[in-house]
Image (cartoon, rainbow, N blue to C red; front, side, top):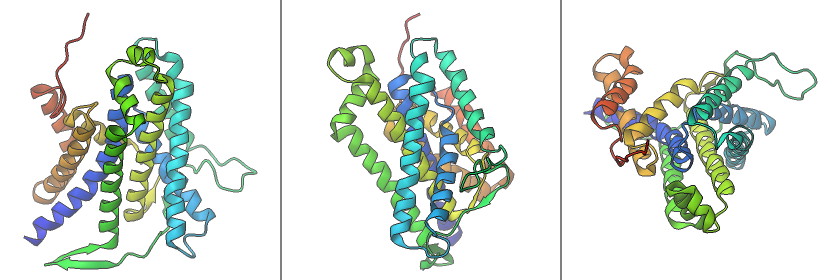
Length: 310
C-alpha cells in the first residue's frame, strides 16, 4: 500500500508539471491553430531565468520566502515577455501564410533557443550568459523538510508546495479563461478571429497575451521541477515539451480542462509503468498513449470532432 501511495504522489507531482506546460500548447492552439513547438524551450529559459535571479539575489547563501517569491515572479515575467516577443516577431508576420510555414518557424525557434543557450559565454557581461552546454546545479530556495509520513511514504514540503502551487496556477488559469474579460476575448478569438475583430476585440493583443500567459505557466513548471530535481541544462525542455504536447493531444488540444487531466493521467501512467513494469519504458509510454489516441479518438478525451472545408 505504501508503495502504491508513493507512486500516486510521484505521478501527481510529475503530472501537474506536464499539465502546466500542456496548457501553453492548448491555449496557443485554441486561439491560433498553431502547435508552438518552441514552448518546451521557453520552459528551459524559465529555469535559467530563475537560476540567474536566484544567484543575483543571493538565495543560495540566505534563502528567504521573499526572495523565493521574487524568483518565481521574475522568471514567469521574463518568460511571459519572451512569449510575447516570439509571437510578435516570428508568428504574427506569418499569420496569413500556410500553417506549415508557422510550424517550421516554431521548430526553428526551438533549435535557436536550445543551441543558442549552448554558445560560449559573451565576455563583458556580469553573468555567464549564454550558460553553455554544461549542466548547472539549481540553488536550494528553501530547506527540504519531511512534513508527514504515511506508512513508509515520506512527504516533504517540496512535494506539498509544488503540488499546491501547480494546482493554484491551474485554478487561476481557469478563473482567467472563464471569469474575466480577457478570457472571454480569448474564447471569442478561439471561435473565430475575424468575427471577434469585427466585434471590437483586439485580436492581436489577445493572441500576444495568450502566448505570454502560456509562457509564464511554463516558467512556473520549470521552477517547480528545478527545486525538486536541481539540475538544469539547455536541452532540458525537449522531453518535457514533447510529453506535454502528448498530454495536450490526449486531453483534447484546444481544451483547457483536457490539458490538465491529460497531464495528470500521463504523469500517473509514467510512474506506474516505471514502478511496476519496466523503468526503461518510462518515456515510451507517452508516445504509446499518443499513438493510441490518434488511432482511437484523434480529437482527444474532451475535444470535439470538427469537419474542415477543403
